[in-house]
Length: 313
Image (cartoon, rainbow, N blue to C red; front, top):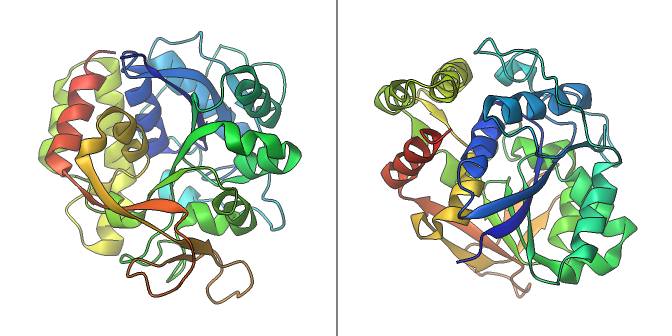
């Protein structure tokens, strides 16, 4: 089977880093055409730094990393250092990157790549706020019909929100961008908190990462140990949810996930519910389905996949 061509759009983030590593460790399943960075968990200068650190950790310095939008479409940037630390990759002690950023803007790379490849052959994988994707769709509306699929991490229904009572962080940071993406007509698969909160890094699962014994395995264990302190205190859970790797795991093993094709709308007006993903899970409206909204995950299968693939790097 030919590997699926993907662009990873990201704001690393420890969980973003693991998602990138999983993709880079799986060349038989996914071909990473490039990594586009956006402001989100931390400002753009740090997300571009962190993406290159992860590529160098994986030994994949030939991957193109592009800088994208440094702020949301119509709001001030909200970041998440309280979760990810001041660098976004707090935990392991990793060297500063030496590989350069690729020339050009991330949005132009997304547009050009979709136009240069046959329609339906490039999948977009947003792991952060949807600013770059929405900007590309606005600048070049023709690309919407060329996208094979948009597989994104964001939103929540049964789990509510993680940055406000009803809004998940990625959608809340740029709800206007999310609204554009969900209304684009492109095929969308959503990995919401309802899935990611079932993918918890328990002590045993983290020991498995560390047990790989490689620099990648040890760094991932250190990342998740740092990352989990916030969620364990907030939710009283036994570990941190690994949000973003659900996106790349779905590309490799879609059978690990279950969900429904439903209508999803984004709240962009009310400050009380700004960034809420209004998921019509029960089909109570006549709004047309526009996204496959996941709700279930085989967590053991997910972590077995992660451990097996990360051991390759």
